[in-house]
Image (cartoon, rainbow, N blue to C red):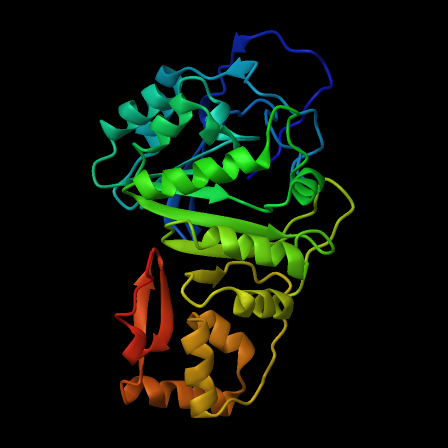
Amino acid sequence: MYQLNMQSTSYQSANVSAKNSIIFGPINSRRFGMSLGIDLSPALKQCNFDCLYCELAPSETTDKQSQTVSVEEIIKELKKHLTQNIDVITLTANGEPTLYPHLSELIEKIDAIKGRTQTLILTNSATLIEPNVYTSLLKLDQVKLSLDAISADVFKKIDRPHESIKVDEIVERVIAFSKEYRGKLFIEILFVHGLNDTKEEIKELNRTLLEINAERIDLGTIDRPPAYPVVGIRYKELHEIAMTFDNSLPIHIASRIHAEANNATYSKEEILNTLDKRPLTQDDIALLLDEESKVRVQELLKSQKLSIKTVGNLEFLLPTENIKRKRVK
């Protein structure tokens, strides 16, 4: 995502003609495939959060957009850039995309022209408490919801939400949405050192995630220069956190900016035990294991003691005997 220059002035409600800046990409996303982005706030940051880790400059929070792009303008630009090799049309924004006031109409207009391409939104989850947003998101093929914290104090510190937003209300609606939604639901947690990486907060996250029906839960950390002076955590710490979550949860480590090769030696039994607790991708294996252990992984695959399971756009390794294991709700 790019950042546009912003001025600290008061804006009157108005329409914005942003032309090509509405559309960006396509970008080859490791998690979601070839993605063509739609920026629903191309002229300035408009968000109900002011997250510590945001790649955009700090700004006051808002509960509505003061500048909007018309649905007609968006569809006109989308038609120019939509090709057959696009996997997902991603609704995002310089800020929070669900603040866009014509979201339901826009999704319907995109559905009319997208063909086999999937629709995806990247949202901070807060507006799920609004019935119209909740209903609009049900229409999408894929939804990525952020959920950085469960405790009210940690939530306020890390996400710096608009004063009207309460984390317990968000959690309640995320759980309800996950049970009603029929598309692919992804949950994203971004860890900030010293805030939501504590044992207490991870325990709360684990408890809540067990109530959510998610296709995949992505764990990440700060990958770009943040708005405020905070730091992320290392890949090794992300891996340790991943291993503490209940092994029925579809956890995936999404961030590798802070990755350092571990080069640890694992026996075949240790590999099977580790993957029994937490399925890993080949990228994870490459970072965690030494060369001899990687050979053992290939031998386990060849002997069919390990299998590959596709979740969303990613392939995970896990013991073959567990391939049919499903979470009990």
